[in-house]
Amino acid sequence: MRLLVVAFVFNLAFAVYPAVWAYYTQAKFSFSSWEVGATLGAFGVASTIVQAGLIRVIIPRLGEHRTVIFGLTIQVATFIGYVFIRYGWMIYLMLPIAALGGVAGPAL
Image: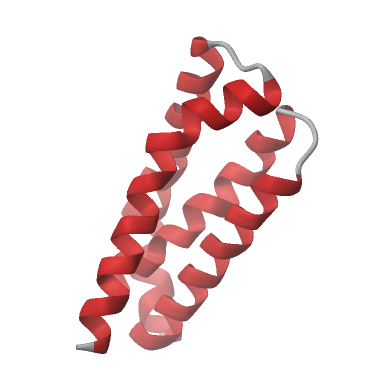
């Protein structure tokens, strides 16, 4: 049951991310539609790299339990980081780190 609750909260939190991203970046950084799309696209590319290459390295090395903890910690840290960054270009620096948090899903 605990695993089910964690999976539900994880998926809910991650679904909110792309749903509010356009509003957040436009309000805080005055991003244009193109910039919103560029950041979402860059995150997609970074996530693809993590999903295609890093998962098969990280899960055997850390184990499933530690990989989930590692991935969720990275995601929480980047969500908090997005709140405190001051300039829009800093988002691009955080995107690869945020994508690395994607290892939690397959391990979960």
